[in-house]
Amino acid sequence: MSALLSACKKENLVYTYAEVSSVDVNVVAGTGADFTGRIDHISEAGVTSHGFVWDIHTIPTVENSHCLDLGPASITGNFTAEENSSLTKNFVYYFRAFVIDQGTVRYGDAIPFTSLGSLGPEIDGFSPDTGSPGELVKVYGSNFQSELLIGDITQIYLESLPCPSLAEYDSILWFIVPDTEPGFYSLTVSTLGNRNTSDKKFEVK
Image: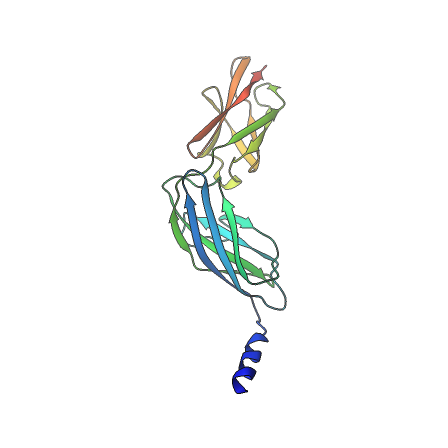
């Protein structure tokens, strides 16, 4: 009888805060990585957000690192997510699972892994399809990386001419038409060593 009462008490435990663990990462050559975490406990207040963070630094955070936010959670157990566009081949990264509970971010341990690369950029189109030097052009597609990687890692080219660029989302890039001769130019996006050239050419006026 005492053993039964003890078991009932354990099932009725009320936790004052959530707890999360970083479980595992599965690295896939050329396509990214699959992260696994586990929510061990949930408080009465609930988990308002959960997911993963990763970086080349040993202690990634939601504020300063790459982040996959999976939203609220109401049950304990494993959760997974796939990242396929921000990992440079042969770089060592550290990932942590996280939960946000009552406004506080709680993390699992940092787990290191060596990336085998990510998916290359895909270009669906751009608008406008003509422009003069100094004008902004929007490029649509996928796997353009996040804003944390824009600069030396994500580049847009008209033929071999680099264009000043920035990212709004992983699926949207903006670039400034460079000062060059009028004509039709192939548009190429390069990210993490992967390149893709649009089937349609951009016209510089």
